[in-house]
Image (cartoon, rainbow, N blue to C red; front, side):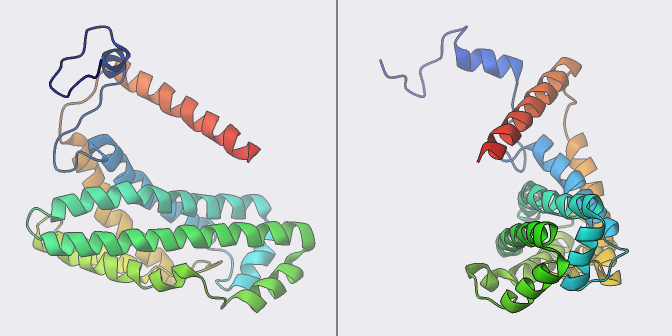
Length: 261
């Protein structure tokens, strides 16, 4: 028998049991991805980006020096680029949450700023994959070989080339929208706009401008994330523990399966 949307589910069904064990909110300004996902993303995404930028600060910006640093300090560079890539991925729920709040008063800026910034995150994720491949080449065949290969292919066309400017324009539109919609004040709006200066591309190291850009992102989004997390009742301790255990176990399982290929 087919269950219609208006037909109540019987007590004790798997759906209701799961809802009681792991309750999910579906309300507020951004029901998807939700208050907790959006709030954690607003806090963790910028901090991870900042961690990655600071860890590679001792090394020169250009790709030959980044590849040499990988050979000389493999663990440090793995953490630096891994943190930056993780922060990039974690920013997508933050963008949805931010755009939803901007959209109350400035829907046009929220729409186009959010779309462009999200497309830019796709470009950064693609570059992270290229970085990983280049590092594997440096590990196995040396920095000189990897540098020569990257230098010969650096300008090769790929479909993500068209998105390189999207993230710059996206952050600027979001900054204007956040100020006009009174999501943040003028100082934090300027800080958010500074994110547009974060270098984009393959094997980009850290410059003083990179530090300014991620500092601005943290100043703009981390306090907003705290506000989002506090904008509602706190969950029970048992609920937090169940969600933590579920997410941890799922992440470990996905990592093991991912390693298999």
